[in-house]
Amino acid sequence: FYSQRENMFRLAALAAALLCVSHAFQPTSMPLSSKSTAMSATMSKSVPFLTAPSGTKGWVGDVEFDPFSFSENFDMKWLREAEIKHGRVSMLAALGFWQQQYVTLPGLTPVADSNLAPAVVGVSAMLQIIVWMGVLEFWSNKGNVTMETMFSDEKRVPGDLGFDPLGLGVGKTEEEMERMQLRELKNGRLAMLAIGGMIHHNWVFGEALF
Image 1 (cartoon, rainbow, N blue to C red):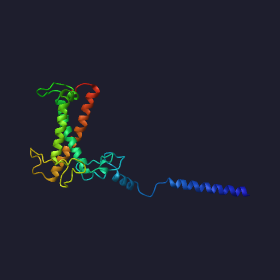
Image 2 (cartoon, rainbow, N blue to C red):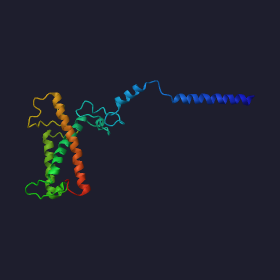
Image 3 (cartoon, rainbow, N blue to C red):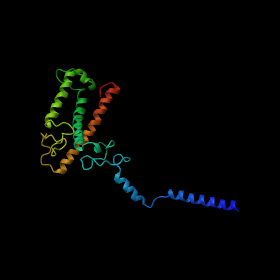
Image 4 (cartoon, rainbow, N blue to C red):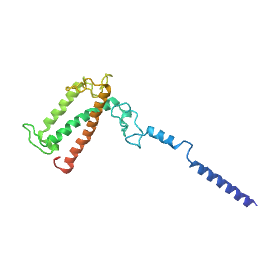
């Protein structure tokens, strides 16, 4: 009799445990559409498996791409200044890299592989570029070149050096200026990838670009 009652208790305990486990794996009462909406509101459009960065919101060219969270740890003005300057240099570099293969300045030795150009002109010429670019960087912002001092003037706009010899920004509305800034950013981003690809092409294959 006791063993029969003991078995009944065991069966009842087992059934209760199974009921609890099955309930734990049932969906919550939140509708699927609500959950997907909440998730899409916080996930990046560019990298869907990462959360959208908050530091880039409101900036021209924001595509919610910041996988290393730079915008969360550094001054966004400084980051934008760096991106614009690297983009501008890369656009000039991408143009000059393939021009080097066909055009040689007077007094210089022709060389098809642009990666060999620094060795041809020598160390002194390369140092001149570095020194004068440093002077230009120092002069353009009154010596404020560090992250801490670059934007001591709160009115200063990242990348705006007051250089517009063709007057492309004259008479433009704020919306039109943002479109022009977006074009520069996109071309600069593409140029950074392009010059990296050109340099590595010559390194890997050991020959000129074209």
